[in-house]
Length: 209
Image (tube, rainbow, N blue to C red):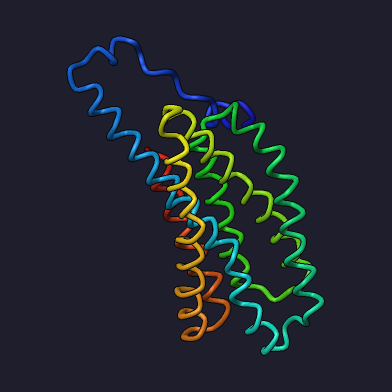
């Protein structure tokens, strides 16, 4: 089992030198670079969907009498503690693994956490799962930064990093508009469920690239 996990996250081989001599090599490289860039930008945007879903659903949870303000504060704060520790440890890991699979795995599990939360009202289960969410949320940023470093030159790296920075806003917009519509139409549980399903689906799109 451990060997399979190691093989799954093992870094991919470098592109053979012979391939760089092909006539259409530069065009192919540019195409791959933009493919990777768009994937990590939208991928990290969807990380925000699975992170901010809780923020949108707080009020319905209080209105329904499921949690009070102090309980919501505890749940929310646990994510940031786990996220802070995770960014340190997973940033180190991101330098040593296949980042496309690493990033997709984080989004997949974060999506699964949201999906499961759409079926429970047990407070301590919420706390534990939201801690897990914070940990796996920390897979996203390091993987994106490593990808940008691998696929861009020094002259363009800042520009690509700046464009990637819009992923935060993409994720926030999708969450606060889309999740709010879902919650107001179908209820708070479906806010978690839809966020989870969307992130799970996009995680599978990330892996082949």
